[in-house]
Image 1 (cartoon, one colour):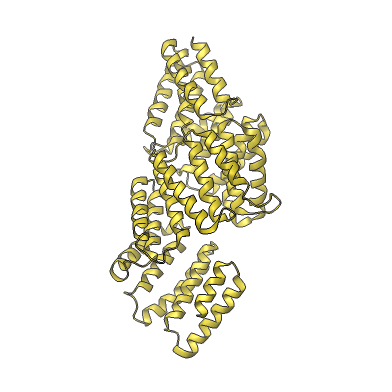
Image 2: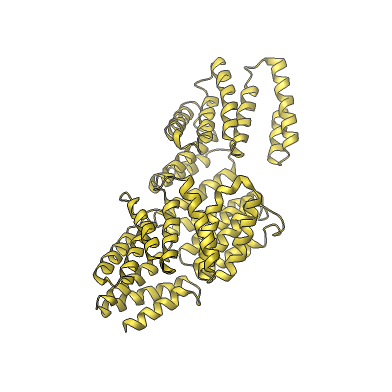
Amino acid sequence: MLGTVALIFRELGEADRYLALQNHEMQLALSRFGDLHPSITDILLNRADDAVARFDYSAALKWLEQADVLIHRAGRDRAAVRARWWLTRAQALVDDPHARQQRADALERARALYERAAPTDPQVVNVLDELGVDAANAMHSAVAADYYRRALAVAQTVSNRNDVDVQTIYGNLALALSYQGDFTGADRAYETAARMAEQTEGKTSAIYWEPEANHAMLVNQSGQWVRALRMFDDLMQYLPPETVANHDAAEAREKYGASLAADGIPDRAIPLLEHSQRDLVQIPQYDYELPVLRLALGDAYDKAGRTEDARLALKSALDWRVKENPPDIQPVLQIRERWGRFLLEHDDLAGGEAQFQEVLLQSHGRKLAQIALAQGGMARLDIARNDAPAAVRDARKAVELFDQVEGFRDVRVGPYLWRIYGEALLRAGDPGAARLWAQKALDSSVQYDAPDSASISRARALLSSAQ
């Protein structure tokens, strides 16, 4: 009973009462039954879980060391508690780039042991979800989606499932589907996630804000900008006041701001993004999210004509990414390409070329949106240097690559590359083909972007030139 009440206080966010009751539970179990009683192991594993939730992975591993000895001494190495131990160990290794194989082995041990010892345990859902996350991080979106579907199927059979965890898996499934280009399936999955979060916690809970913000951003990336803005506007009324620093609210505002900037509405985007930046700076454990925010803020500043502010924000994001991440991962390629585009558009052709070339060097045969964009950047350099044949070749490569893109995608990338191809064709003396690509870019930009966006005016100018 002490253990159950302790967990209730943990869910209520009352950490002091949770720990006090848990300590009482441990003392009682030790005095009556000794250190091999299941309650002792459960407490140690709960503490490891709590440390993982706080991103304190070293503390989690210490609690797991203590639990490991007791599980073995009690002869429970083939029981469900050992499977849970393997799962928590895998979660504690998630941030260690040198322990990827150890994490994979731990997850596989947990999956196999649950299958033998407790196939209907609610934790099976979490094991399959973690396997999906690893597959997604390795850019195996179809494999990830399969794991998420299996996790959701098991969740339907579990009587005491955690619906907060289930809605997270629906969100993960949505992301995997969007990376396969299945915006319709992703839309449905995000809608389910948001609905479950609303039913479980209500719209004023941070549990709801994340899936709803992700859903609205997905809708925006699929080109439905009016619908997306309606969704974001509805969500904003449930966030705490801007005077309260809140991480989850900052994330929601960041995604709204990034979507507005993508739509070509930077003046509305900038206040949201600046506020989110202030919040994240005040919450230092989330400083790893600042590069994502500053990329969006730099994009908004640039589109609003605030060149020096854009330079500072984009360079800050680039420096952080290059320092903290391997050179070939997608976030590094993303900020390099955007920084290269900024330099190119502000007359630093050599600087832009260096960034585009580095992205292409790190492509490793992958068909990523950032690589298609960098190839488009090379075509723009060719145009600036009056090398029309090279411009046509590079632009064609960019368009063909985007047609086969894997992973993250935004439909607006297409019209941007089509404009470049159209301009290259025009420079090469083929106005008929240029008109076709300019018209295609214009039609899509009118559908995907706000009426006053630069993408529409640029497509119209290209079409006029081709005519």
